[in-house]
Length: 65
Image 1 (tube, one colour):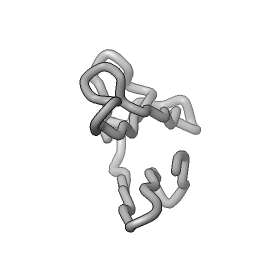
Image 2: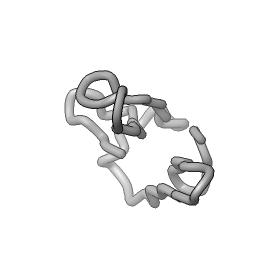
Image 3: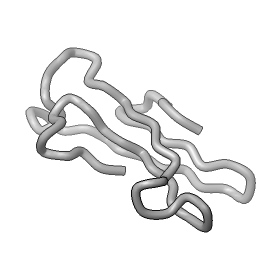
Image 4: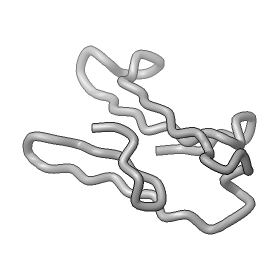
């Protein structure tokens, strides 16, 4: 999970592994719901990883699984 400085309104959650490494990761993006840069406030970023599922969320809102 990352927030890239050139994209202040987006958080990316990406999976990397065999067959989808480097620039070929499986990526989902969560955009700021209030159109404010993520760096302007405190946020809770979460990745849940189980045997069958990986999910990404920001501030309690799941955006990918």
